[in-house]
Image (tube, rainbow, N blue to C red; front, side, top):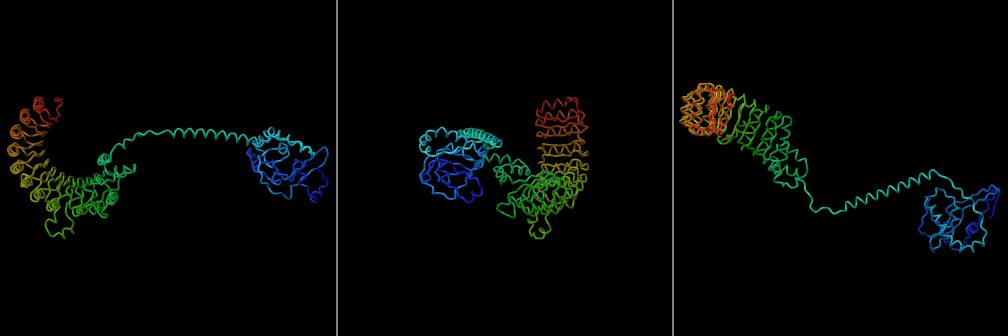
Length: 571
């Protein structure tokens, strides 16, 4: 080994690199290298066999400098300026312990490389002995001392690496366990949910009992419910019973959504029930009139914003309308066709409204003129209810008797302007009349009831409650002519036991009887009714001066009779 003291000569004189290799490792430059070190930039050495490298590619260090305090000399080596071709011969990679000791790495050595160096020492001892003869011919320099340092950063990285390996091992074990669990064969018999067992027809039948707002909520549950909730069978009827819903907007959306094959009209809807919808206006009924030509049933109870204009549109454009309920609409004064329709209609039948049912209870604005107009256009009426229409009188009732010959049920209770003249006009309806209520029409007397009984022999229900002028004379004619009477209310009338005896002998099919507040009735009259009318189901004897004997007689002969009373002794 050559030692050069002046530093200036280092840059001028080039080092014999081949001689350095021969002095350090005992390798002939002209001989193929069989030992190589597979070193990565990260400091890990692979135990696997690698490709052989040339002499220039074999050096993984840029040079070495050693300072000897004993001799005071400095030795420096520079990298070679030229290389040789890489041989094609490949042999297994063998590590030389001396090579590892002579290297000064630019990065922290890895545990794998350190482990490899220690293991290679034992395996390469045999091979080094075989080459001793060749190496002994050259004088080897003394190896510099190996200085080991404790590197905290290296130890921290090592501990972290070990923890990561342990974590990965646990994760792999968990994944394998989950894969084993998921790989178990599933049961062939999968237990379905309750709604999977229910057929579509049953669900549609259940949905048919829901109001429209709840049906729309069900459509947002799942795809199946959405499909079934828009079944055309469910939308023959629209029911909205809410004070907060904007009914006008809802009707516009629903009628547009239900227009399947006909974009302008909705032919599916036949019944619309809007009860207590305070936000309903004429705009909503205008939408119904334009889009629902097949409408047959309409209820708008308690809709205070409805006026005649919208009802006239409904009657004009919904030609199949048969049922109309405007209970509690105080602004409605009549039911008729629009002026435009009336001007275009030339024939009489074109001016007709084919209503069968009309309920205008609590329409306080209805008067005789409006009732006359109504009867002229609604000649096919069969059920008409005008309860508490306090402004109508005999003129309006007379128009009913003349223009509506098909009336079966008529109620003008609490219409205090009606007298016997109006009741006599109703008797012209004849045998078609089956139900009549003139309750609390205190101006009706025996005259009107007798005339009614003579002409309406098929009467089944009569309510004259509060007509104090009705007496036994009216009961005698009524019992003899209306023998199929089933319900009679003569509460607070001037009827005695004689009237009850005639009634019991002729009206044996009587099922409901009200004698409330009839002061002239005694136990004898009630006992006679109980013995003859054994099909009696309901008896009202409130505020009557009766004893327990009458009560016991009713219980004895009328087994199914329900007794309404105010006598505490009857319990």
